[in-house]
Image (cartoon, rainbow, N blue to C red; front, side):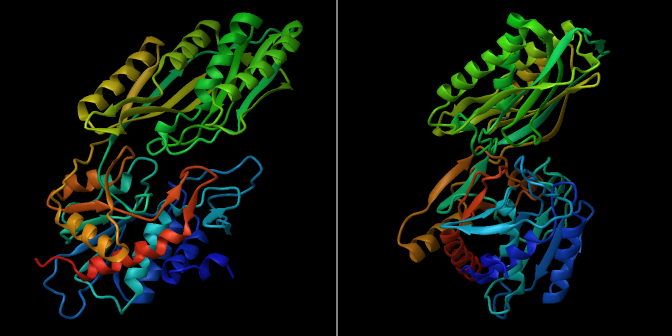
Length: 485
């Protein structure tokens, strides 16, 4: 039996454990959708899958609570599929292997999926518990949040009946999120004709790994290394000093995760290989010195490989490298009235250069629409100057804070009564589905909350056990005291 089933509260951890047994990476949700519908039928609540692939569950009010405002509990079913180099895990077929490490629940070699599986598990706990006191409750479990909020964006209007939305996708207990950033995906592509590699050249693979990576919204302010940007610095020197040429580049794999690994294949004159390898060792020491106290063990090394038959044309190589160097990455500006919160940022998430095709993917975020447009145009200009085709997609707006929210005040009151301390109101730089859902249901009163999680979107993702029980207690008390219509 899984050891996390024994944790308190059992109703949430048991359901979360069940979710870990069902593959649910973004884009492959058929199994978890089927599991959730089967669960709803088993516990006797209405449920259906809508046209966007979301699962909606409905539970009627407890006797005497029919006059209360309806509450929508919202979470997303998909998880980010990241694994360590050593892991053989297949996210489309294999269960997540969880374990308890002191105060935390973690996964072996992969992301844990507590983002947002804990929120889904809480909805399941509400739906199955016949002893709870509450008004009308709906569970909205959205599809493919991590890859573009597709479930929320395609949520049909008129489908939801509630008046209050509690988003269960926040990641610091004791903080109620009342606003979040909007964002837009930027994709830059270039088709080119490869040229033959000099038959007398050697080839080396340059690898950087061991970076922390992390959530490009929640952890972009921590100054963590971006594998693509660090690699660009070395490749620039390799071209200028050692006559290197670029053959391939592969870095990052998720638009909303800071890339923690990157590898390139370079060709160069054989007589320069040893000098290049010496330079790799020097850059490894430099990177670790630059990021001391932030990154723990950056690995940067070179391996001899068979020379590829073709490589990137020199002019294209230089243009692409200029674009990587020139594009903004990281925090651009903090919110003037919340100076501890990031307002605008971008993440150079994915670079893939191979076989005559160059592909860059970035996610730009801002809580201010004008600044989101500014950073997006900045990036577009950078890549356009390199001759790349640039497309914007997946645009979503920010969520404006409402400090007069009725449900916020109820949550704050209940938090104070339960735990004898005040909660904190917060605006997040991470994108939440609240803004998209509000665009379709503008009457909703919205707050986001959840237990503490750290390093989502990485293989060190973890959930703080001690925060799940108070989260559950607050959720139950708030549903029992839902405002009258």
